[in-house]
Image 1 (cartoon, rainbow, N blue to C red):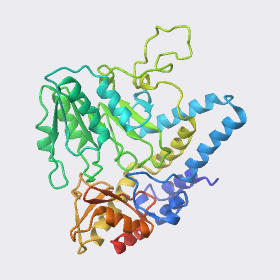
Image 2 (tube, rainbow, N blue to C red):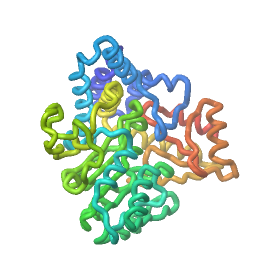
Image 3 (cartoon, rainbow, N blue to C red):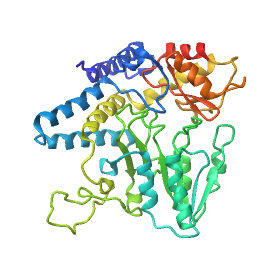
Image 4 (cartoon, rainbow, N blue to C red):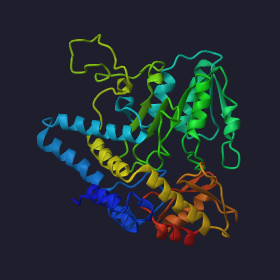
Length: 397
């Protein structure tokens, strides 16, 4: 197996960390992703292809179990904890504030279900949130008579002033995605977080469409809870959900699904009355998908070594290039391209009457992979894409 991590470190050192201008870096990265040889793959907002180093790591752990049973159990736990530490560094939080769950939906649901609700409370969110960040709040509305206030979309954007004005003294939760799945709109988390904190509401973020391509500093952004998962921009195996809980959130949200490792000393089977862990680790219930954490570690290590700021800049240029190439074609850009609002997701709407499903199917027949989302065509390049991929897409639109 090639030492790709070593190659990336040497590139960073030689070019003073200027990833955006290093053509050879993209060549090295593409070697890790066999999917780039078969497809013009522009669908990482749905499922990203896995790098070979992640696949090899998963196989290595499975082979270990096959040959050794539980003999190396401590190594499995250590790998999971290394992945946790890298993720914490990427989010600029403490590792004990990160819990692994099944997926984004579980993460948001456990926050919603762990709070004491009463009539008169309200939740502020956005009307076009992905279902993972809507159904948990809808259930709270229906079960407890809580008001669910939904800010409308305005021309592919969220008017943040309109959104923030929905928050008041009865707001218990403010919930939004860092990046919207159907428009690519990127929210100013710090601005929203400050507003939520002013009214003592908990700020909950669905980070799955941003984590892996954009820098986060959850504490500085006043985020109290955040949930995401491994299979999109993190380029890792499906099945590793991520839940962040701030110390502030931990004092308010109770773990509602617990197990043998949720307590302070899970290996002390004699003390069944011991306390639950005082941090996010109380949300981890028991043994998990050990082999997948081996893949997760390799993928997040790769992203972290390159750096979110460099990936953000690279994809900003790549998506700007896409917008330039489709000018004059029968498409309008739905996604905001304003500074601070644009993301690696670009959503297009055909102006000649073709549906997004028809266009996506036609592109797939040419081995160009994108997603239809309502009346929009969603294009989501990642750091393994290049200008040739964008040119090929534009030529087929």
